[in-house]
Image 1 (tube, each protein chain N blue to C red):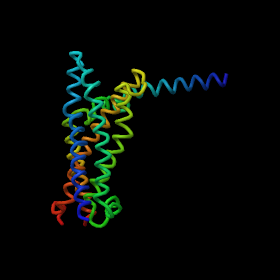
Image 2 (cartoon, rainbow over the protein chains, first blue to last red):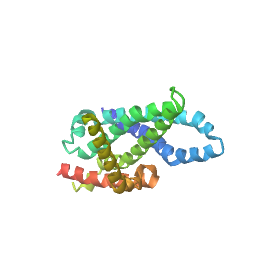
Image 3 (tube, helix red, strand yellow):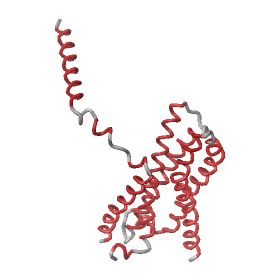
Length: 162
Length: 65
């Protein structure tokens, strides 16, 4: 039954790369690109054709990453999330990833729906949603830095003097 | 008349407080207005993430004993 953890790890990596890759695309590329595109009147190309597709893969990749990670932890899931059994490093990574997943589905996506016109909203509500989604997305970039460190650290415990 | 006196004293108190707040740059939020959210810039976000990593590293290290 070694196939299950190997497949879970493979899926966890692939989905994780898609999720965090798109998160970095939004923050390192799209935010600045939208500002420039708004200046020459081409922002609709991004907001209509790129952003909705990117958001679709972004939010579902987050779910697949989390589920594959949970499958990988298997019967150590409880120990990881309670920092027991020498699993504090991977547990910290798992907690940060969980907070990021909640952020995607409870904050970023509902606000992006208003911004992209998928949900009815006034101009004032759209402006507020823009700011909230932006800060939530930036928060996830910030959390991704320690999250990736502890995910890697779970397999390299020497960095914690063990 | 008593009610009027109460209203006047309240107005005076509020006006005094407003002038006190206006004269105090810290209470007036003058210092706060110069502070920026680090998440507004990419560098601020990355540096905040690195600082958080360092803090959590010691937390995890202490948990691992």
